[in-house]
Image 1 (tube, rainbow, N blue to C red):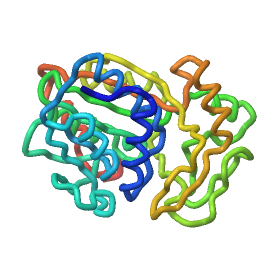
Image 2: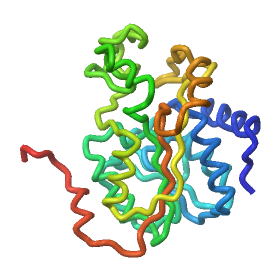
Image 3: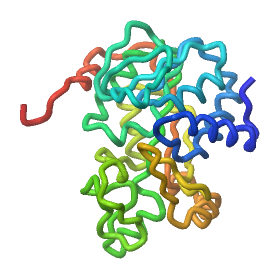
Length: 272
């Protein structure tokens, strides 16, 4: 039985984050996902955590203790001592087995080729398998207000060292890894439409907040505190899901699909 009460989940997430090299942002998405999977009585035997870390894989194992949880990441520090790992890039990978559930949390915005990630997951899922995607929502309420005044939106920066063009965003200290390399950003509608192109059947969509009262654990144990975290959480509670900071989509793989969809896995760029 999946534990869905808030305090139990937050305590579990804090423990998972402590043991991980990289922090777990947007903990609210895990609360919503746990509730959704519990209501649907989803009990997978094989789980793949794409772009995951030791912390997120541990959370999945706690949710599904009988399942084999494999974490896919190209950064060894994030894999640590997890028993079942695939060292590969999230935007193009091949698996020797099929999975009942694939979790792609906060990774699709980091890859150059989002089609490659979606196509790789499509190929790696059992027919009717569960695919879960979470990513920042480019069209959230705050970004709409920022753009209205000509400011840079959140979750995106032309620099990997500094936030620029917005007086409300923390500027950064000039070290790499502090600013997220979000180079493939999505709106709520854009992500859903792309998943449908790849024949995924959308089951549930949620919005969530990244505003949290506690500091976020960044890479190499650097910490930063979300700006106006309390206000953001309150506002995100009242606004519609499609205006919230993050998007969580739970969908199902098709029973069959045209093989042409897998061409999205091709590496390279448009100049090759």
